[in-house]
Image (cartoon, rainbow, N blue to C red; front, side):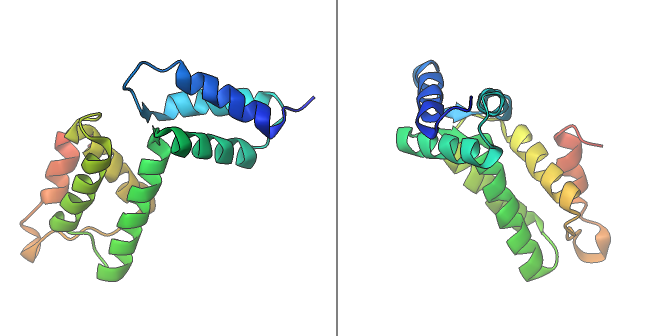
Length: 146
């Protein structure tokens, strides 16, 4: 027997209340586990995800997947408009994420997330005049990506 949307929201609400006080950031493993429970009780992915997003918005929580989706959108818009992502634009997206997250994630973690988005989507990166400015390679190396 499938859960109703109200039951799904109640479950998500209980899970959010069980979080440590002040911890308003929900990483992907937490989100995956919450969605897995709903899916295991007969709720579709779309309904479960929408219910979780609404609960988080209503209660002031921030999902990592939402932050990543926003970052992916910003990078895709910049890549489409400028043909290549440059160091300044990368820094602006990093700053926007940092503003949303505060000190929840280290800058190297944010850089790793952004580099993975760029690499996964094969967005072109501006390397500078004559290719001597290898800023993206430096960022990737400092983020632990090779």
